[in-house]
Length: 172
Image 1 (cartoon, rainbow, N blue to C red):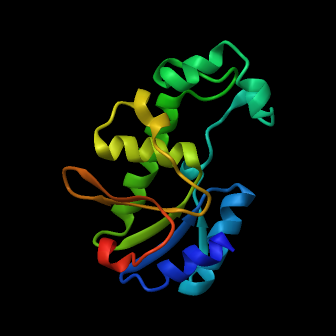
Image 2: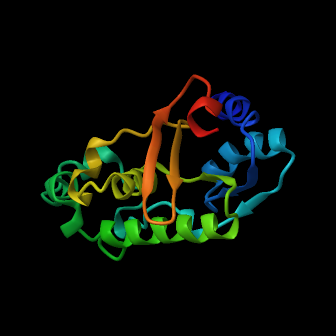
Image 3: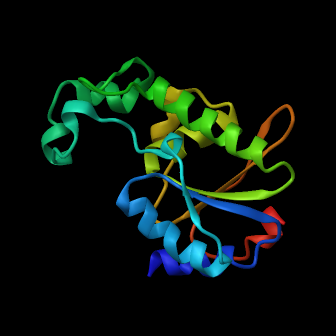
């Protein structure tokens, strides 16, 4: 229902060139109603993938939050690497690089990129010029819409974690 609601908001946007998604099933499931509403295929892009949590993958948050490393994840994420996984710094470089590449492929157009909370938060922090260590303060809800305008020299966050309202007035 949340993905359908997002699709209803995105369908009216002008200049949408493509719908991209992380390869993970939950992202593709969110992208499907959007792609269907726009009558476009979903293009899979690995740069939109969730953070590689390494050995923490699949663990319960209540268990992970008891680990001493959890405080580093929350307070100083730029200094943390998931055991046998990715660092938040690498995640931010990957997601912002992927978005820059996708934007460059569709100059002057709107792209829809369906990803996951941590990559989206990292992209928003980058667009705002916010230190990565503060990105945990950003909230990204399931099937919410975040819009970032990428210009020649900078990025501008247009809306973050939006779940209702007219997108065309913001993104237009």
